Each structure stands twice: as structure tokens, then as C-alpha cells.
Length: 129
Image (tube, rainbow, N blue to C red; front, side, top):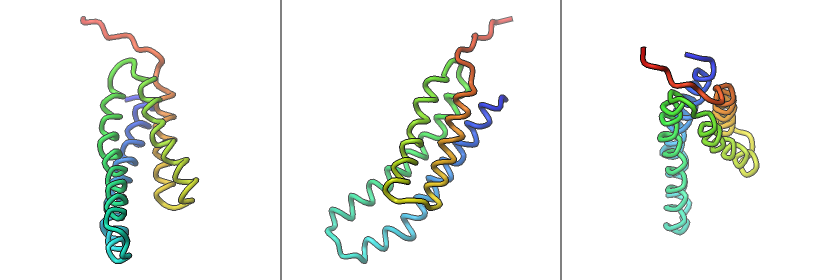
């Protein structure tokens, strides 16, 4: 396996673990706090929904990135998909600041972008021998 694919695998593992930690953090910390806050239930429900959607996109995207990286000539697609954690990291730093989650997302983005960048621009299909 090439260094590019190793980096994509590591980035995907970071993304997957980060998504699991995000679910755990919501279940243990954020969701109980929302219940005690006495806010409008629709607002609390919207926050829970967005929280779980962010977790779901990490859980679903991470194995897809590994799978796509094993296919020939997918460099541009992987670079495009790597923009998701890049944008997430920028938004997290802008609105929430520095914390463990933003470091995990930024590390994921760096690994994925670097791995995708190192993939060959085009790959020749292997001929049947």
C-alpha cells in the first residue's frame, strides 16, 4: 500500500473515531444539558439533530473515503471530498475556537488532503495477463 493510501486510511480512522467521540459527547454532555436548560423543545431537538447529522456524516464518509481511495483514477474525487473536513475545521475554529474536536477534524483534513494529493493524477488499469 502506498503512503498516499496510508494517509487516507489514517485520516478516515481519525474521522471515524472523531464521529464516535462526537456521539458520546452529545449523549453524555450536551443532550442532558439541553434537557435541563428549559429551552423550546423544537430548538433543543434541532440542536440534537444537527449534532447527530455531523456524527453521521463522519461515520458514513470515513469508510467511503477508504473504499474510493482503492479505486483507480479517483484523486480529484478524493480531493473534493476532503474539502468536507477542511470546511468543518474552518467553521469550527471560527465559531467554537480551539478544542479537542477541532484538532481531530483539522488532523483528519490534513491527512486526507495530503493523501489525496499524493495519489497519481491518473492510473493505468492493470492489463489482464
